[in-house]
Length: 97
Image 1 (cartoon, helix red, strand yellow):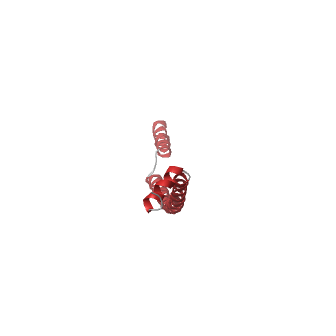
Image 2 (image 1 turned 45 degrees about the vertical axis):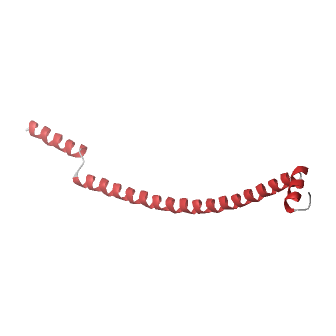
Image 3 (image 1 turned 135 degrees about the vertical axis):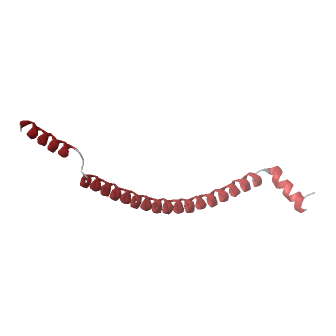
């Protein structure tokens, strides 16, 4: 009889230590919920990244325009502050011989 009581106690302890089907189902549900949350966050991040990308492209275009403008100004200043260049252009258009 004592042996049977020990078996029953051991069986109960093992049941308490091992995961039941309900425990496994609960863990699976929690995993599914976490995956859904991850997907939601992923989609939100994709949207934010696209918005930032669009904003940066606009800023880059503005900077490109400014750079082109200043390059033209610098080239113009270099050309027209050089005496030989001025004489060359005047000869080119026929004012000087």
